[in-house]
Length: 320
Image (cartoon, rainbow, N blue to C red; front, side):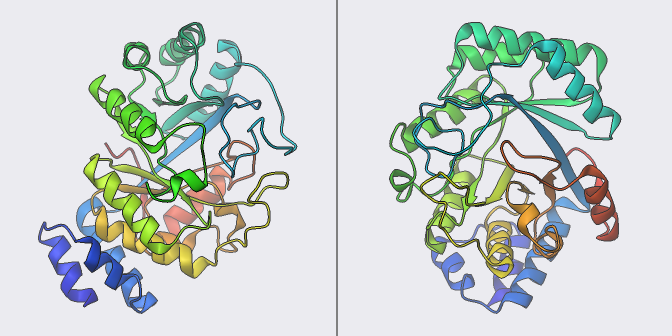
């Protein structure tokens, strides 16, 4: 079954949900090996590595149950307003000097105001003047007009995670809807931005929920897909969730590769919890990473990621 479905994908056909569900119970090792073969066929040895800066932290009015920055919970997190263009430029320059090819400003909150968007656009313009680095943004549920402002300032990609499936999303967040997220993604695309969107596994969802999320991403033509692994943070409602086993993360990555064969599957938050820093996942179809620190948790260093990518035969470069 694994070989038959692998050949179906390589020959340009899409898997059905039923086929993906069958694969979800397949033997892990051959499943991961087949996913890696699909990755090599569609993406070669590309490894797309990016970094982020927490440009505005804490006091978020949204109630996402996994998030330390939500004002609804008592997690211990740093709070500060939007960073100045000078502070953001300094971080971008440091990342560019370290060989990072993509850099994203991420902000807390449902969305930024027009004034705040103007300020971050100033930051992006300053970065463009001094750094050769691809610019991304993750600033909530912006309007199409605001997306246009980012595009004009040099941003090429917008990030907005679906987080999970449509069915399970209300269990995770009640202050905005799944449709709100999809509308923002479509508005960003309409403004000429490519979109990076994925989710978090280990929230309490089923494997079917993960497959449904991947299918929605396929419908939205998303080709940069972050896979976060829940890091249960004290003070959040999910603090007592049991962290996923590496085998479960590998299986999820492999299934995503079968369903999203030409996407960058970007390991993101929670990778630092893995004993091998994601090595097995990068042999199961994943081919990208957010390096260094996440928003409120630690990550894997650029140096470690460069060594890991080289050992696995990847070449670090942009994948459009």
